[in-house]
Length: 345
Image 1 (tube, rainbow, N blue to C red):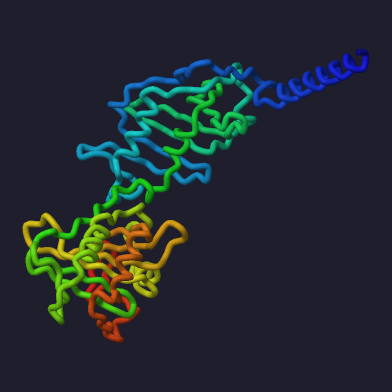
Image 2 (cartoon, helix red, strand yellow; image 1 turned 90 degrees about the vertical axis):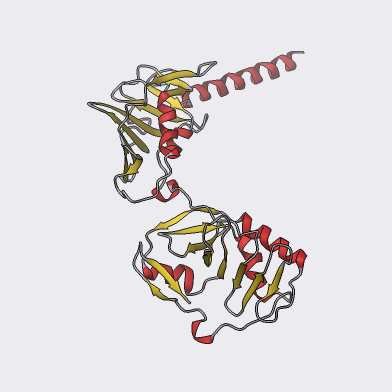
């Protein structure tokens, strides 16, 4: 019996020791008590309608400034950049009502301790003569939330990671992505599939007749034709990689060792138009670099969609036509400067 009591006493002692260690290691205990609320607290609320400028700064010092104009938001660093305004709207949504996960009270000396002397991110919002500054510091490794300071208020708050994420995007990640147009379902449609060795051309004389091979006139396999159209209509860009690429960047990423090219008649246009999408080299696990002719942006596109399409350039279904040797793997003619990009194969 005595032995059992001793074991219980030892276990209780170890439990108390563990609790003491947790207490001492919990951030903020020496400079203020961490208050974890049972429900979310509201750190700030503001009317975002008068906001004229939003500045997002990273720890490296790199800053992006966004200005509200009569036509919408623009990036002052790159005024011609096709900015997706939803990224700025999401930041403003945070400020309209910013929830917190707790506060470090009486934290006058806490700025350095919590990474707020050299913050991971800074958000500055201006409305007329007024301004608001939010500093995002270190991450709390227990809760995975971030420390936050509002203006020069000594109170340090805990906020969820979404605020830091929204103010540390690269500009390219904030692009309004072009939509890849659908292939026309009507007659008079032409689809070109091209890789480094072969070029396939399919023509639809009318919507009922389906595709035929351009030179032989033989009908294409209807089942594979339908799969081909379906793949083309699923194409979409993952993200912007490079705005206003230089000629040498196009050559290196797209034309020098690229996967191939897609060309087809676009759906829903008043006049017959062809869409030309050049598929470049692979970009890690994200997919392939892709450049629509005439665009100012090199995109990333899903390899799971473009590989089957380019693969059909030498499909047994269609006639194999060797590309002209002098054009194979070379940069097309007439690739101009950014904003005046055009290609002639």
